Amino acid sequence: MSNSLHKPGEIAVSVQHLGLTYTTTIDKRPTLKARLKTMGRGTKQTRVVRALDDVMLDVAYGSVLGVVGANGAGKSTLMRVISGILPPSQGRVEVYGKVSTLLALGVGFSPSLSGRANVYLGGLAAGMSSQEIENHFEEIADFAELGDAIDAPMRTYSSGMYARLAFSVAVTVRPDILIVDEALSTGDARFKEKSLEKIKELRSDARALILVSHALGTVRDICNEVAWLHKGKLIQRGKPDEVVDAYASFLQVGKSAAINEDV
Amino acid sequence: MGTATPVEVFVPFRKGLPPLRKYWSTLWKRRSFIAEYSRTQLHEQHFDSVFGQIWLILNPLLLSGVYFVLIVIIGGHSDKMRYGHLTACLFLFYLMANTLSGGVKSVTSGQRLILNTAFPRLMLPISASVVAFFRFLPTIFIFLILRTILGLPIGWNMLWSIPIVLIAILFSSGVAILISCINVYFRDIANFLPYFTRMLLYLSPILWETSAIKPQLRKVELVNPLFPLLDSWSRAVVHAQAPHLTSMLISLAWAVLVFTFGTYFFLVREREFAVRV
Image: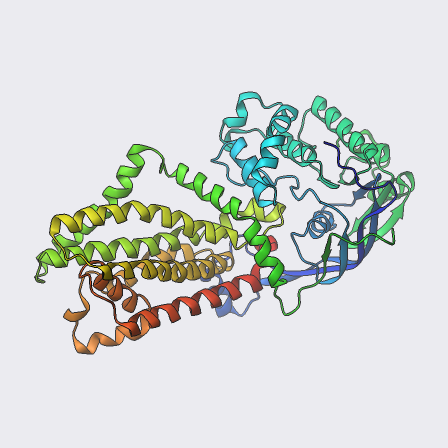
């Protein structure tokens, strides 16, 4: 059931002057006890993080935008804003279509439940009807190649199985706009290849894709445009080769093999 | 571009609240998630197995037995009315206590889902109250059998129990929503909760009847929202009498107040959950 209502080149996502700040705790596990302790000492327990700062981006249908950047650059935060998980602090995000809101680990929030139950719950939470999930379920299970493990509790899954299931859900529901956030880095080589095929297929199907990845080889290979984020700011945006080269020389890793491998 | 209109626009929240009308309609559309989530949680608690259900029934019965022995030992008067009152009130109390204990961690344990999916977070504590309600249902039948054995009076006034249960659900959902949100900021709230509910149990007319209390202690009535509610409940289901209208109105006011405040508090904080859990 192909539902490509969009013409290639039409705008899919428009990010305008986006800024996001939030307060977070320094403690890993905030408690009342810790709060009282720090209050007694007069130390602060929270810090303000400026995760995104005046980011401008747009993605057209039929194209793939790669997002690169060092750890903590705000890539995942940007993806969460586009999928409506985090509301922006400044600016505006317009989305012209259905986003796959299941990011890398959307399924599997309840490890004691089976993969099947988690796919259902994740889908329902994201606003799909149980009929829709039912229709797609076979395809999801097939693509993930989990076999009987689909009915085993998700705590028994390896990280690769986890990622495979998450990716299958995200691509099988045929979103207008698909966000892939480093989901494939744990899959094995064969599954990576299969995933890349799928991504290319979706691109030619006039869907919009945003690929967050550290695998610069893949980014060069399949993206039409690349954006480089650093500490919440958009540093550069343009042709894949130019941006990736600039980013790679910034990282001072050059074209070593290590960065070309993963998806 | 140009002619197309955006499907979704994300802009900063005004006054910290998400757009409410859209929020409620999304929440209503996702009710199948609430149903499915509650079902799987009940399944995990073995609600659908015979032994699971027996345990669900045995647990409150044993509890009422234990407390009845306690009352006899500390020398309160004891008769079948008393036992009926104790059992009925314990069952309703456990509906509320289970809502709280299930709800308190609902947001923090939904971490994965919160980080990766856009949905009204209010769904999580609401699911907890649905679970508590389904665990309450079998105890209704137990009580009906019990009150027949005890030969308690029967009458139309027992139907007051329906609005009373609804008020109890509204009230406890409100508290569950509130504490599930607070638990994001202070994770030890979940540890305090058992002491809090135990305290509430002793400060409510469950182990004792309202008529038996010393006049000096009547002040408890003013600060304990469960007081008028359980009093009405006992009148309706044990004595088959109509509850006092003032008691009903006070409980309703408490429930509406707590639910509104809890929901407001939750909605204002909700956008932070993805960076705090």
